Length: 409
Image: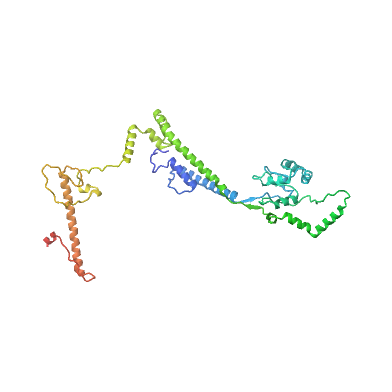
C-alpha cells in the first residue's frame, strides 16, 4: 500500500492491519505493528472502542439471558392494562362457553373480541398451552378452584396464579325438585363449613404436592448448560470449513489462475493485494531459476569448502587463528615433490611475500608474549621475597626464568 511495499520490517501493510484488528478484537497481546499515520491510529482507536462495546454488551446480554432471571408475566388481575390493551405477541384466553367467557363477554366486549381466537375447549388444554416451549399462551383465565388445583399438581412448578378473584360465585349440588334430600344436604354443608371441615378438604386436595405449599416467587433462576455453548462449536466448525476452503482456493489459484495470468501478461500489478503474487507474476526466468537453485542448495548438505590461499595473520578469521604443533619429526622430501599439508588438505602454492609478512607478525606477537611473561616472573619473585613461605609452613617455589633472562643476568 506504500511506495516501499516490500520493506516488511517497517511498513504497516494490509496484513499488519488485519493482525492488529484480530489482536484488538480477541484481546491477545501478539507481536503487531502500529499504524504510522494519524488516520490509521484514529481508526485503530475507533475499532478498539467498537470491540469493547460489542464484547461487553454481548457478555452482559449472555449473562442476563442464560444465567439471569426469568420473569413471569406480572398481572394484577382482570383489570390489568395488559389484558385490556394487549401488545403484539401477548396471548391469553379461556374455555369456550364457560362462565368466565360469559362474564368477560358482558363486562369487557373488546377484550373478549381479542381473546376469542385463543380460547380452548377444556382447562387442561389451556394449561398445556401455557407450559409448552415456546408458550402458546401467556395467560389463562378460568375458575380459581380449577387453576389452584392445576398449580398444585404441576410437577415442574411452572404455573402461578396471579391477581385477585373476580365475579365470586358459590358452588352448589344439583338435586331434583321437591327432593327429600335437599334439607339434609343443605344442613350438612352448613355444618361442614362452620366446623372447618371443608377447609380441611381443600388443603387435602389442593396442597398435596410441594408446589402447593411454596411461596410463589415472581422470578425463577435458570442454569447454564452445554446447550448454551453450542453456538461456539458451530462457529468453530464454520471457521474450520472456511480455512479448508481458503486453502483449496489458494492451491487452485496458484495452479490454474496464476499461470494463465502470467501467459496473458495482464493484471500483473498485485502489490496492493499480495506481495507473493506480485513477485510470482513479475519474476523473470533467470530469477526463477536462481530461486529454484537456492532451494535445492538449501535442501542438500553443503560440502566442505577448500581453504583459501595463505593470508596474513590479521586478515584471518577468528576460527582460523589456530596454532598447530607438529609432534612428528619432519621427513626429508625430495626436490620437486609436492607439499602435502596436514588434515588431508590439497597442496597449495606458497606466496613468498605473504609468508614473510605472516612470519614477521608472528615474531612480533611472540616478542610481546615474552615481555609479558618476563614481567609476570618479576612480579612473582617480588611476591615470593615478601611472603617467604605459605600458610602451611612450606617454602614457596622459586621463580623460574627463561634462558634469555638467565643470559641477560
